[in-house]
Length: 379
Ligand SMILES: [Zn+2]
Picture 1 (cartoon, rainbow, N blue to C red):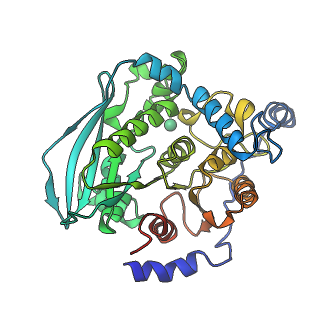
Picture 2 (cartoon, rainbow, N blue to C red):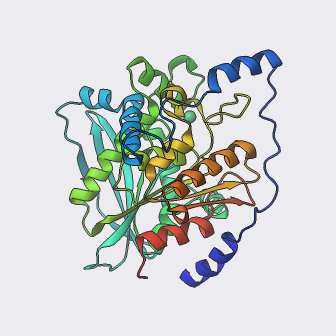
Picture 3 (cartoon, rainbow, N blue to C red):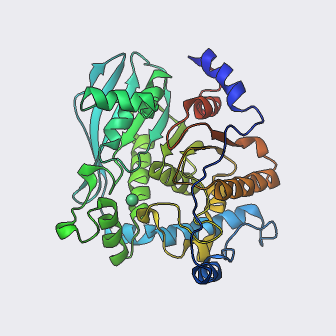
């Protein structure tokens, strides 16, 4: 597997852009709308990265992280769950198809149980293994999909066809895979939407309750992963906690960007088909409503600068040319910005971006070689 990946790595990182960029129009606003959206979205955020930031790069990161926590509502969540200690419950482990699979759940707030899968290679003891957290996006069954826990044969066929089971890919390469349900996206972690008041969309229902309470949906998701990271570091047996990576496609990729920005325990991050500008030049907003963090572009910065909070750690990004959710100019603008900031820090080689030939999905031949080089450098 490693040899195959090594060969594919050469092709994946050849200095070419593969295929044509997405062709969908994101700019069909009237002139009046366009002028208005440019006026409200067109200015750089107050905390956009600048080499002239007083105190230097790390001072900028400290200020930007503090603002990001505030805008996500992290401090409010912390104050609302004051005194609560997350508890993890582990079910019986079982052997499946060459690895071990264990269902678990973590109570990240009183009464909020986030289920997750733990996948372990067979017979790794006594070696400590690196950990990969796999965060899913808009799929009510996403945590099962990512962990290869299929509800029927067709589920398995469709998932494997688009390499949508990163937890299984991870455990087969010697990682402990942690695959949590994402709050507001996975069915067991969702709040209902009586009368379809929020468009019969569970993620919108989550968002609206969060906004009314001074939180954000993304903040709750970051909170859950942070609780999991605390548990991984303190209690996950067999884990090498100096080697933790995180990945996700789509909404899971957006979550990966925010967690990696805030939490330096993540050594390498892979947001797939998700890291771009928040809006197109004419104002089209790319991500789902549930990813909205109010005022983030004005009071903080655009998404590339937030991803730059991952510096000096490694970041590997892909987009698919057939992905109709994203616009090539916006992606390329965000990637150029990240390349610029990584270059300014003299670690250009720690940022990787590639267009890939298909759509909105994972591209294992691009991200695993990077994850492996950071998390399993001696293999
Ligand atoms: Zn959503």
